[in-house]
Image (cartoon, rainbow, N blue to C red; front, side, top):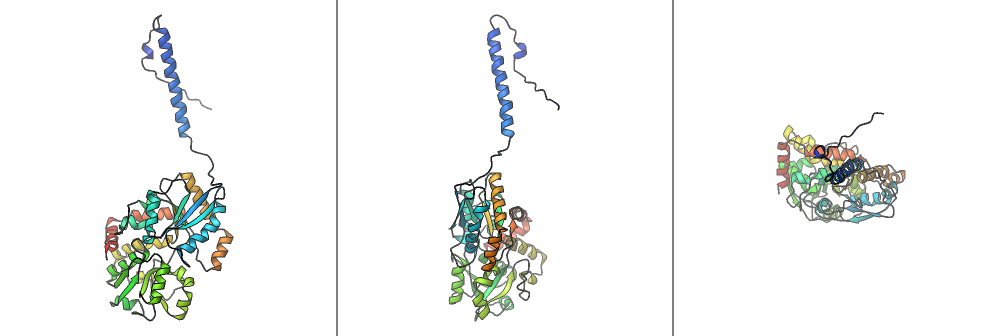
Length: 372
C-alpha cells in the first residue's frame, strides 16, 4: 500500500528565528496553525463521505395526495389501490394515507408539491399525466411556474390511451363528422388537463369546432354531465377507465368512442381510428408527439424537488415492488384496472427528453395551449 505525504505550508514559519523573546510565541503559533491544518484535512474527509444511514419511515405516515376528486373510477381508484400496498414495500412499513387534492386538472397539487411540500419524503403525489408539460406549454391559468425536471419522478402505474367519446344520440356519429365542421360542447377539468389541451390540439391542427367547457372537478362529474346531455362528449378520457367504469353505456350504445388520442393504438380498439392517422404534415406530427407523449406516463407518481437522493431511491424501489405485488395485481384485475408499470427512471428520462424538444415544436405547442 502506498502512502501519501501531506505537506502543510505554514505562513511566515520559515522566517521565525527563535530567541528568548520570540521562541514561546512562535511555538504557540506553530501549534495553532498545525491544529487548524489537521482540522481542515479531517473535515474535508468527513464531508466527502456520503450519508450511509439507512432510510426508514418506521412509525410514520406518508400522505399520498391525489390531484382529482373522489370518483367511482379513475385517478382516485388508482391512488387508493396503491395506498393499500405501498407501505409494506417501503423501509419501516409506514402507513400510507390517501388524500384528495383536486383543482385545475391536478395543476394546483403539482404547484404545491413544487413550492410548498416538505422535502422529507412524507408527501408524494399522483398527478395528471400532462402536468409534466405544463411549464413548457404555459397553460393560461397556471398558478405558479415550476420545472418538472426537478421533481423526483417515482414512476407511473400505467401508460395510457385516451379516447374521444361522444354521447348517443348526439351531433356526430364518427370523427369524420367532427372534421366536417360539427359544433360540439366537450368537457374539461381545466387548464393542465388532458381534455383541455387535446381539444385545443384538434381545433388548431384539424380545424375542428369543439367548444371546451371547463370547470368540472373530475372526470366522474364530466361523464355525468354527458349522460345528462349538458355536454356532447369528452376528448382524452382514458380507455382503461371507460372500458370498465362506463361499460354499461358502451354496451348499450349511449356512449361511443370515435377516436384514439394517443401515439399508439390500443389492442382493444383495432377499428377505432388513431389521431395520427389524420396527420399529413411532418411538423404537425412532431407537435402531436410532444402533446400526446404524456400518455406514456398514464398515472404518474412524484415527490417534491430537492429530495435527498436516498429517499427518492427508497420511494422508487418501494413503488416498483408494490406494482409487482401479486396481491395488488390480483385486486386490479378483479376491478378491471389496467396496469402497465413504467419505472421512475423511464419517466424521468421522458420528461427530460420532452423538455429538450426543438424550440419550433415547443412554440407551436404553446400556441395550441394558449388557444381558446
